[in-house]
Image (cartoon, rainbow, N blue to C red; front, side, top):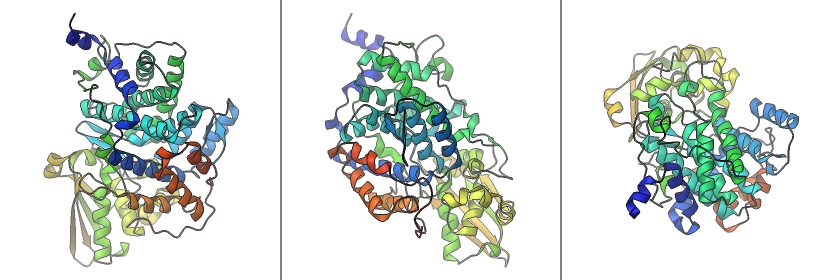
Length: 475
C-alpha cells in the first residue's frame, strides 16, 4: 500500500490528532501572537464584566454542593475542579455577549468559547503561558476550520458541536496526550455533544449562553478519560451514522496544513449584542450623535439588514422580537438594541439588565422599530456585515445612515489599544487601576511568563461592583 493510500485510510479524528500533536510554539508568528493576546485580553474583559451575574452565584452554590479537588481557579476568586472551572470561566466570557466571532457561510462560531476551558486545563496541568497560548491557538484552528467546512447552523445545529472537538484537542495538547489519545478525546467529546440551534429561537433562554460552557466542561472530562485509556468512535466523521451523514456532505478539511493563523480571521465587538447587530448599532449611534437626537425626537425607525441577521435577531425565522423581557432575549433583538442605543447612547452590560429591558420607555420605543431583510446586504454576507438605519423624526425629518462593515470587522480590525480601552470599560467596577494595569501587562507578555502570573491576578478581581465606574464605553 502506497503512502497516499495510507494517508487516505486514516480517519478525520486521527488527522486532527496529528495536526494538534505536531503544533509547536515556533509556528506562532509574531503577528499571530499579538492577535491571540488581543483576543485573550478581550475575553478576560468580557469575563470580568459578567462576574455579578446571577447564574454565576448559582454555579458557585452548585460547586459547593458537588465539591471536588480544587485544582483550577475561578475568575473572581475560589478554586474548584478543572472541568467545573472550565464551565464557570467559559460562561463568564459568554455572558455579556461581547466575545470574538468567526464568520462562515453556514454560520459562525465564537473561538473565545475555548478560553475558559483551556485556561482551566492549563492551570491544572501546570502549563506555562507559552503552552497555554499554543493550546488556545490549536483550539481556534480546529473550531474555525470545521466551521468553514460545514454549514452547522444552516443545518439546524449549534456551533457548540465543533467546540467539543476544539476543547478536546486543546486539552489533550496540554495534558500531553499521544496522537491516539487525542483522537479518542475528540471522538468521545463530539459524539455526545451534538447541540441544536433551537437554543437561539424565541423565547431565547439562559441556555444559549451556557451551552458552550457545558460542552467545554464535558470535553475536558473526555480528554481526561482518553488519558486513562477510554476509546471513542474513530469513524466519527465517516462512519455509517457519523457527522458526514448528519450533515449530508463530505467534510473536507486540510488537517495537514500546520498554520496557526486563523485568529487573523476573527472579529471583535464594541456593543453587547450578537455580532450581526454591530453595524446596526454603529449606524444608530452615528445618527443619534450627528443630529443630537433624543429618544423623544424619534417617531419610528426602519432597519435593513442581511437575511441571517433578520432571521436570528429581527423577527424572522427564529421568532418574534416584539416583547423581550430577559438579557438572553435582549442581546438577540435588534428592535430592543436600537431602542436602547437611542435611549441611553450606549449598549453595554447595563443595557442588558432586566429592569432596563422591561422599562416602559424601552418597550414603547422598540415597538416603533421595524426590521427587514435587504437582498443586496444578504448577497454580501458573511464577507461583509452591512446595515442601514433610517430614523423618522416626529418633526418630519428622515435621517439615514448606512454602515458597510463596522469597527472590529476584518476590514476594520480592532487594535490592541482599542481592546485595552474596552477592557478598562468592562473591568473598571471590579478591579482598581493598578490591578487592571497588571492584567494588561501580563496578557501582553503571557508567552514569556508562568501562566500562574495571570491566574493569580484573575483570582483577586472582585465579583461585585466595588470601584467607581466612570468609563463611558468605547465610542
